[in-house]
Image (cartoon, rainbow, N blue to C red; front, side, top):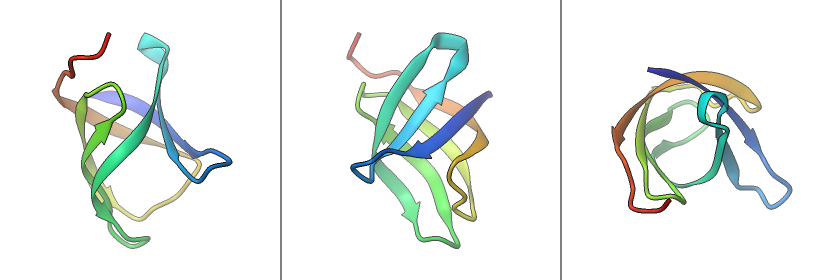
Length: 74
């Protein structure tokens, strides 16, 4: 499990930042994307898949996430 910082950029994309690896990626797919139920399985621009327990969408904010699968991008 890892603490992830989430924020929205000027283009309206959600940035996923993992300080431990100094990794910042854009979330490209969300399992749940309503304001009341947001998260679930998320895919990132580097190909990684992470899981965020579905919760109310509060950005910017910090969540706990778990890696499901590493992507192919370096």
